[in-house]
Image 1: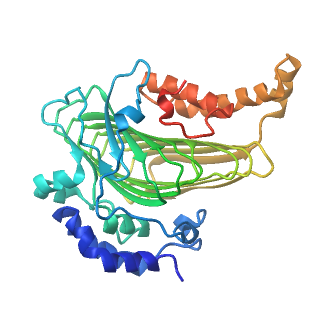
Image 2: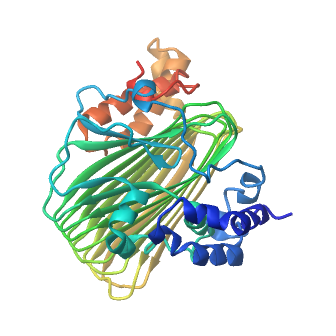
Image 3: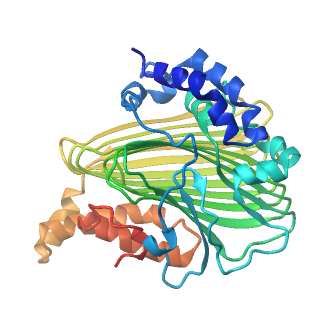
Length: 448
C-alpha cells in the first residue's frame, strides 16, 4: 500500500471534522490541495527535489492527529523559560500546531502589529488573510505543501504595518507535546508592509519522548523596502521528523536574512523557496548542521531571480559524525532580462568519520548575460596538518578536533545579526560538539 493512501482516506473520512475546527479562509483551499495531493502522491526518490530523503518510509507509520482540537495539558511558560542572556525578546508559544493564547507576554507590540492564532485572524479578517494564504505556497507544485494545506487547522499569523519597526525580536517556541505518537501540521503566515522591520526566532523543541511527524509551511511576504530576519533553530530529539517548507516573496529594495540551524534532530528536511519580485532586493540565506549517530538532514533551496538588480548569498555548512547523512541541493534561477544579478552559493561539509555521508548538488540556471554568479561545494575531512600542529603543542586529539569543527561551523553563526543570539549559539554549538546536548531537556537556549 502506498503511504499516501492513509492520508487520502483520512481526509475523505474526516473532511467535515477538519472544516468544523478551522476557518473559512483555510477551508476554501483544502479541497484543491486534496486533489493536488492525490494527483502527485508522496514523492519517491525518483523525484529530483526529494531524491535524498525517503518520504514514502517517513509517512508509513500510523500517527495520531488532533483534528478535534482537544486541549493539550501544558503550561509552556513554566516548562520552557526561553530567556537568552542579554537579549530581550517577545516570547510566544505554539503547542503542536495551535497558537497558545491562554497567557500573553507582558511586553506590548507596536501599534498596528497583529500577532496570534492564524485561525482566529482568518475569522476576524477573512478578506485580508485570503489575499496571502496559500498564494506563494502553491499546492500543485509540491505534495508536502498540498498535504499541509489540506490538514492544517491553525498556526501563527503576524502582520507588521507599513513603516512600523519592531525593535524587540519575536521569539516563537514550537513545542511538540503528546502522550501518543503524533502528526502535527503547522502553518505560519507573515506579512510585512512597506518599510516594515521585524526579527523572528523560531525554536523547535519537544516536551515528550514520542515519535513526532511535523509538517510546516511558512509564507512570508516582505514589502517594498521592508526587512525580515528569520532564524529557525531545531533542538528536538531522534524520534522527531521535521518537514519544513519556507516560501518568501520579496518586493523592491527589501532585505531578508534567513538562517536555519540544526543542533539536534532525527530526520529533517528544510525547503526554502525565495522569489525576487522587485529590483534592488537582497537576501542572505545560511544554514548549519551538526549531526551524528544516524541523524539525517536535507536542505533544499531555490532562489528565483525574476527581476534584475538583486543580490543573493547562500552559505550552508555541515559537520557529520557517526553514520549521519547530510544533503544539500541548491538552485539559483536567473530569468530572462534579470540583468545585473549577483549571486553566490557555497556549500562546505566535513565528514569526520568514514561512515558519515554527504550529498551535495549546487546548481545555477542562468538566462541573462550581464550577471555575476558563482557556486561551489566541498566535502572533506578534518585538516590533518592542523590536527598535527595542535597535537604537537600539547592539545589532545579530542580537543583539537573540537576546535577545528567549531571554527568551521562558526562562519555560519557569525552571519546572525542579533549579537546575544549569536553568542548563545556559539556556546550551544560548542556544547553540542562536546556531546552535552544529546537529550532533549527543554529549551536549549536557557540551559547552561
